[in-house]
Image 1 (tube, rainbow, N blue to C red):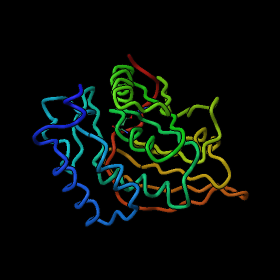
Image 2: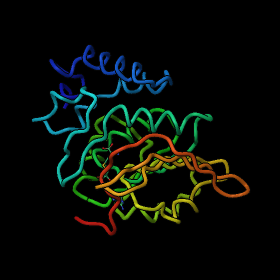
Image 3: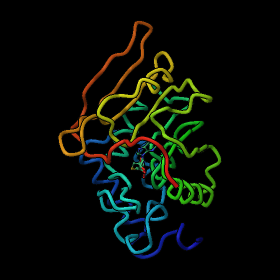
Length: 221
Ligand code: SAH
């Protein structure tokens, strides 16, 4: 694991620097986000057979028909959540590989993350432990319900696409809080939305066209 974390060959610092340059060229401006991406090993979250592609700006399969998001999307969603300052708690729905949660954990005080496929969650937890990220708290459940016991959240990030924004997630956002969420169908168009909760209600902004796996009901082993 030690070698794996430090990175060898294709997983060297130079390939990570190149990825960050690419993200910068694509418009990512938050230097703290870029620095955390540069110094967080993405290959740790990916199967060994695909680890040589870890620093390409592309989504990759992580098993169970799921994917680790493209680094650009990870950077973009993180940058949007942090735009108005650092939120003290973030809820992520769709832990997947655990990579996005790891990036968040290095930028905010507390990250709560929920995953419906237990096998993925167990692997993600192992990665968080290996990287000594003590501020990531995770749970096996259907994230459409959020994690009400820990609510409200200053920020919510959903990394799987529902056709409509789940009401429970809106309710668990604090006043002034921000949620980034892809909305749409898997076959059709999905749009990344930014929801801001105000005293008066919710404001909605449409950001980019995106492609995520669907947000599904229930939880599985
Ligand atoms: N953030 C992840 C990307 C994972 S892909 C990463 O950094 O790797 C989306 C994940 O959302 C998948 O693992 C999928 O199982 C999960 N998911 C889908 N519907 C869900 C739901 N209702 N609750 C929790 N997780 C869900």
